[in-house]
Amino acid sequence: MTLTPIEARVLATLMEKARTVPDSYPLSLNTLLLGCNQKSSRDPVMELTEAEITTALRALTPLNLVRESSSSRVTRYEHNFQRGVGVPEQSAVLLGLLMLRGPQTAAELRLNAERWYRFADISSVEGFLDELQERSAQKGGPLVVKLPRAPGAREQRWAHLLCGPVDLEAIAASGGNASAGSSSVAALTERVAQLEQELAQLQHTVRSLCAELGVSPPGQA
Image 1: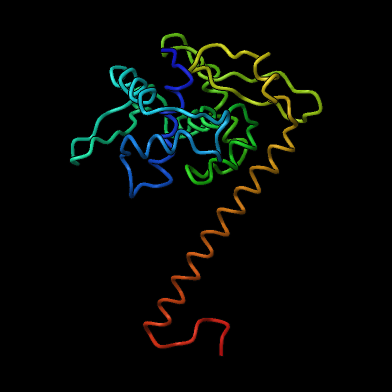
Image 2 (image 1 turned 90 degrees about the vertical axis):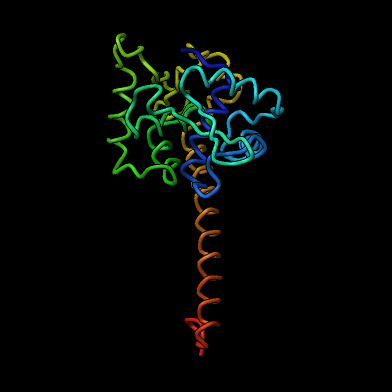
């Protein structure tokens, strides 16, 4: 099984939205298009068309990686990655993140996985990555590879092999040799923004509840 970059993006987007926005999942074609083309948490950023996504869905369906949902008048799609590939939940999470965000260190993967799955520590992430790298030929062969250490980086990054062998020259040309420290800062910044948004939503809920009960919000006389 070798996916095209577009098929990988479609599949990983379905995997992401199943965990981060379960209320709107399975996804309609339009929602899937928006998710594939979003500017954040994507490397590389893509500008796909509905026709390209439809073609990818048609290719993924016979591979048992995507299924159509018939519970709505609008056709919706859901992934079947974990069962279709034959990997545990934690491994599926790591592969989904690598398909969406490109090569990452184990520390970056643990941080970026917060909304998908909470790994206990970096060692547990590395354990699942090692299993994916050492996957036997009977099960389909390795699904990830540990990349050579980039100049100036303290940690090695991992890449998925679902689209075939990794092109190291292409990764370097696309800026893949940026230091792990810079990537970690970007991930932390994104996480802080998410937490700030969640805090604002909680504050709004508390104010609404206080108004219904006729009491002052916490911190106010």
